[in-house]
Image 1 (cartoon, rainbow, N blue to C red):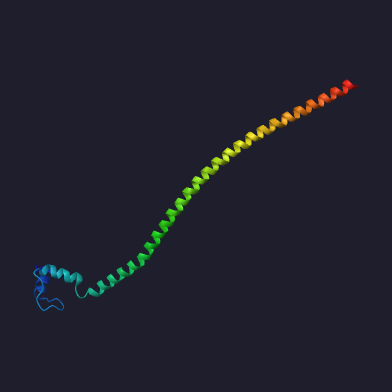
Image 2: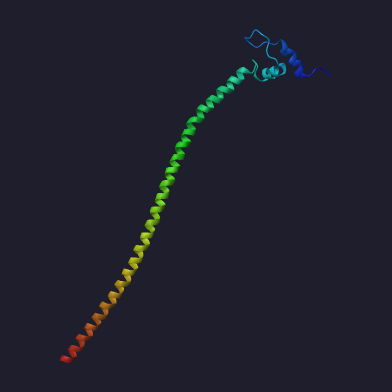
Length: 136
């Protein structure tokens, strides 16, 4: 069948040297080969690009997060203001209801007063008519 790939890599790693290091690398050649497969010299530029992209994305995210926090604060302030307006509106509606009730009571009182004035005028007119009849 042949030698498994990880074993072939392990045999190669025994004689591999890390870039810039003069001694042979590591006690575990299997892990070393896996490390170089993932992070070897061929993958370093790609990893650097990924890390650079990550840092650029973080730089883009930070102002947006700041904007989000500011907008959340504005929302909170607006909700507080809305709550104050709601309470004020409720108080004004209550006051308006009371004033309407007072107006109805005043209208009823005014109508009663008009009836009394009309009745007294009518009475005065009858008395005057009776006096004219009595004098003639």
